[in-house]
Each structure stands twice: as structure tokens, then as C-alpha cells.
Image (cartoon, rainbow, N blue to C red):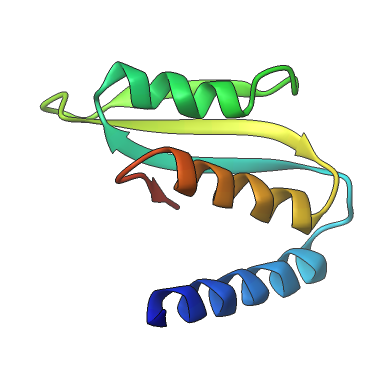
Length: 97
């Protein structure tokens, strides 16, 4: 339960910062790090499918991890947060930056 409260607080602060720093809709850059398992990479990419997203993937030096950058036009801070939450709930061990 403690983690849930921290998540709610984090997303609340993020939402406020996004409203303060951007005019919506706007291009937003998502960054994720996952282990280099193809099904995890595919899942993240599928979450942003049919949105006109530009997706780039860069492997770590040893190839253990994959950095995924997704540049896409988002309509509001709520839609940004929704995507972060969707990725976190569907991709085990993902790190959102």
C-alpha cells in the first residue's frame, strides 16, 4: 500500500509539472529501460502503436538492457501519465525515466 501512495504522489507532482512547463497538445519524449528481452521491447512498442510515434532503441554496452525512446504527440498530462501507468502495469521490471 505504501508504494501505491508514493506512486499517486509522484504522478500528481508530474501532472502539475507537465501543466506548468508545456502547452497541450505537445510532443513528449518517453524513455524506458528494460532487459533486452524481445517480448518486453515489443510490448512497449505496441502500447504506442498507431500514434505516429518515433521509436528508437539503443542496446547497453553489454547488450543486457535496451533503452527505448519514444517521441509522440500527447494530448494532455493525463494521457502522458496513462501511458506511463500502462507500460508499468504490462512490462515487468521496466524503468521509466
